Length: 277
Length: 178
Image (cartoon, rainbow over all chains, first blue to last red; front, side, top):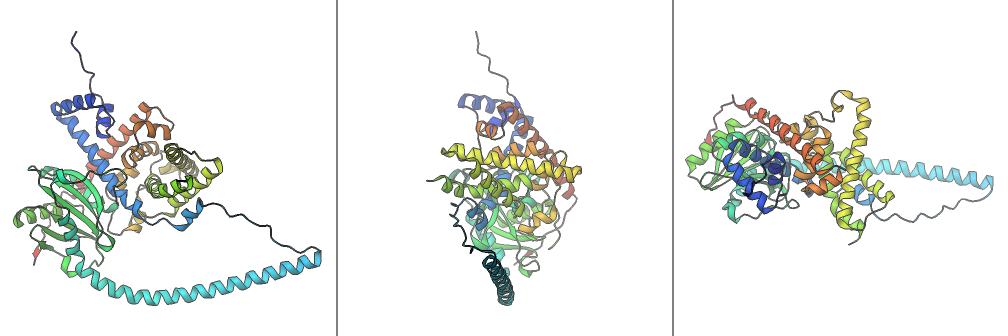
């Protein structure tokens, strides 16, 4: 009697996307997807969702944990019983003393807080003017560098484990363009956070029909009105950048300049319009 | 490694899950941090599992449960959008973290999902739990989990598919500058 494989269900397709199938079943699903393009397209959509979801929220895992959360599971301190004098008169005097001390502490803390806030705001205002001027001039090329440095054949790229996937909502504007990029023959491979500090950005890796890597990096524009990023600017032989509303985009690919510029223009045209900040 | 060390290492993941679950947004949120804090408090009171895998699932399960309780409380106050567990796409909220990241895509689509669908999608898609682990966290059967996951992915795809049509009419030209 000939062996009849089980029909492929949606559960199998989800299992295929989430690596829940054994090798034999996986082969069956692969053969099925090759024969049924509509289901292959659905599975591809689900795969892209997972990549984008992880990229969108990966930044959160890199943020510093607030002290309040760290202390919430720290070993609890042993509390000693407070000393309260015995006798009604002594207790009243003790209570008044505690109230006066609390009031004094509150006033002192308030005055100290006001002084610290004033000092901090003065120094921060000086610093922010300087840092915006310097950061705005270099942000575009730095982002393009992040994109260009990520250019490598997809086969050489390290696979991303769920734990190492990083970052945030920068993919949001790009979500709308994914179908358009698919029309361009670009396939989304991964999304992750790259760079450090001010140069950090969410990057989406694509491959074109010839398996050449295409990297699109997105970050927040620090200086919305910066003149150097109002238009499409060439950063290097294989990278360029431009501003899109309050976001800064960089595109890198091993293409000739004309092809790279044309692709950037198509991405720009396909992006949802973002109001400037 | 002690249980408290494990919790410490787990905190970034829990904050990510809490934000995605509560707000469908990666933007910083005191509410999400409070949910994580409440989870720690509750789990320390209830006792901890000494096995790492059990501990992780125990913590995620409790956080999910506490969020459901919060949602039920909110339902009484804001019945319009909370009745199905869906969230309102809160632009101001998502812009807090990064003003450039407009919540027009994934986050808005994620917010349209029912809470039970979002839970399944986030545990499998975002946190990388296996079906068996996610089903255990949600106290579901495997088929129940897959049903919710299937609905979530289908609905997310439908919502996201509408997004590019809004931008298709825009054909501005970028000028190259040297």
